[in-house]
Image 1 (tube, helix red, strand yellow):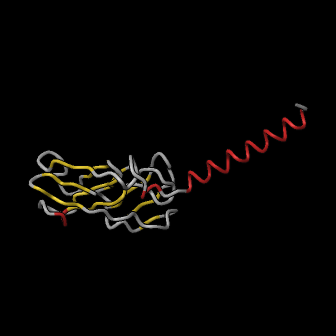
Image 2: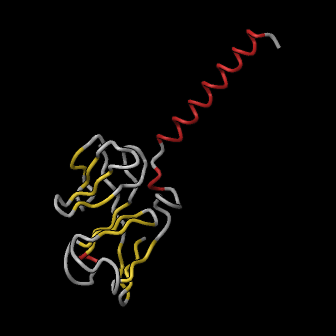
Image 3: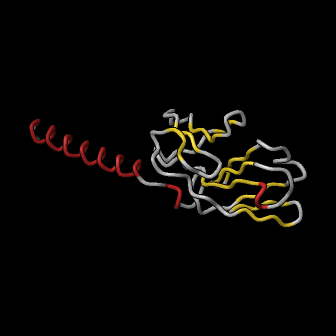
Length: 142
């Protein structure tokens, strides 16, 4: 193979790889199963977890925050944990500001309210609300 053909083929391969990578990064994984996606459910034992207002748990594609006392579904905010800007998992809930923060690993600083609304961008779409149910002392999010 001549050098010109080699360089041309490498340029084409690089362009295709970059296009594929950008397409993968632009997908909203909130609807995809698995970690960070919306297809998985998780549970919390309310005897040992999420006992105080402001405590949160991230897992199974969701973030759950205790927003009120009592063990009823309305005492919890349950949302997808996938940031709508970069597709990474939100990092935490700040109980001082009452905002869900997406600080790492994306590092872009989007913040959401406990209803999922965007408080601070660059994200422009809200987090999707999930369903929380309670049976005995077990909270399940789906």
